[in-house]
Amino acid sequence: GAVVSQHPSRVICKSGTSVKIECRSLDFQATTMFWYRQFPKQSLMLMATSNEGSKATYEQGVEKDKFLINHASLTLSTLTVTSAHPEDSSFYICSATNRGSGTYEQYFGPGTRLTVT
Amino acid sequence: GDSVTQMEGPVTLSEEAFLTINCTYTATGYPSLFWYVQYPGEGLQLLLKATKADDKGSNKGFEATYRKETTSFHLEKGSVQVSDSAVYFCALCMEYGNKLVFGAGTILRVKS
Image 1 (tube, rainbow over the protein chains, first blue to last red):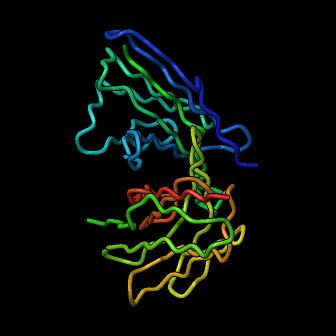
Image 2: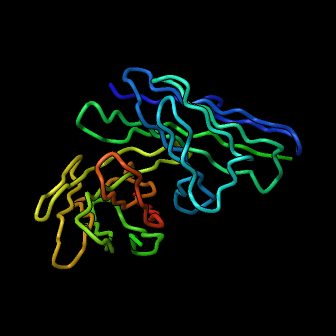
């Protein structure tokens, strides 16, 4: 149980285009989802927190107009990187939790490798 | 602000050696503490956790004890295997279910 999937696992896009990454909780309802960014050989940096049905809360320094987050249902959150540039190339990881379950554990997706050429 | 400091890697060990990865934290209150493991090309998996002082988390032969007096949560394993090669992250959260603060990660390489 408690499986989180991400799609796609890898994506290559051209500079200036937009890319959407999906994060799904497969067997539980995710009241809260988190989006992280990980640079090579570095730790995870929290980008934003999204609660189902409300606007995402972005961390300081993260451009909300560039990284659009939508959490429209209890099983799906999407991250759209708009007008992507090579510096946006990174490993993006989502996690999900169900605050109503009482366990509060975060379950992580397998990550999406974005390469912008 | 809240922060986590891990020992720098990479840590290279021979199979069956004893492992310690140090982790200390700074927090204004009493956080919950976690160790996550990341295998190459994958996301993070929760390895173990502890939610209050003196708790010991354990899983797959790994152990860590929440030490409030030294603000530490060191990861240990008595006998490592090649399959343990991965990146290990120490993390805390102040409100269980809220955002995690991660350490920099420690690369572990186990040689046969």
